Structure formats: structure tokens, C-alpha cells
Image (tube, rainbow, N blue to C red; front, side, top):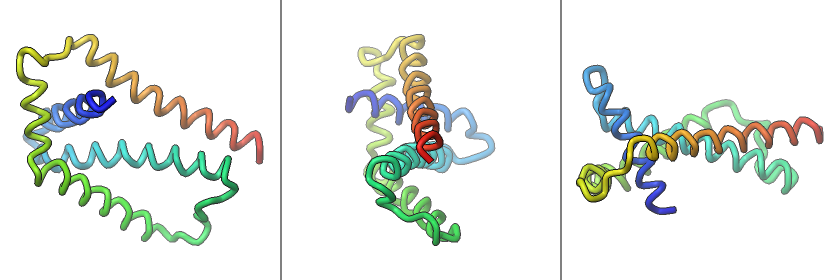
Length: 132
């Protein structure tokens, strides 16, 4: 599982490198990774509303809390991955010939992971709407 997440981080960084002419790759990577983490948080939030009867209350938020949360996510990602050179280590690990992943298998892993995330979100929303 750890290697899966390292590979997803590697793929997000490679996607950010494709847009190097318009944006710094590190900034693009942080944005992509934060969006992926927001998807995870949405899944957790809907799950908590379904099974724990409004563990989190969203009714009094005015958007400022969401903006602060996103900035905290970007800051944490920067500190753990970019500042500690973990991003470079992960990138070097997968660029190495003996650790290279077959492109077809890599695409299947990456897009399959995103498909599973969106499928979970779809079913959570469907169950939530049918219960309320």
C-alpha cells in the first residue's frame, strides 16, 4: 500500500512537470496532491454524516474554514514532501530502471485509484440521498 501511494505521488509530480512552462512543478504538484486529499476528506465527511450522525457540523461554515483547511493541507504537503526532499527521493526511485513500472500497469493503477475514489463518492452520495 505504501508503494501505491508513492507511485501516485510520483505520477502527480510527473503530471505537474508537463506544465512546467506555465507553472512551477512543485506548486502544481502541491495543488494536485491537495485536490486528491480533499477528495479523501469529502469521502470521510460523507461517511461520518451517514454513520455517526453529523460528527462534523457544516451548517455554520462561511467558506473561510475551508480556505484555511486547504492552506493547511498545502503547508503540510510542502513540509513533508518538498522540504524534506521526499518528493525527489520518490521521483528518483521510480525513474531508476530496476524500479520502473510498466506504463500500462501504471496507468491502470493511477486511473483505477481515481475511479475507486469517485465510485465511493457516488455510492456515499446515493446512500445519503436515499436516507434523507
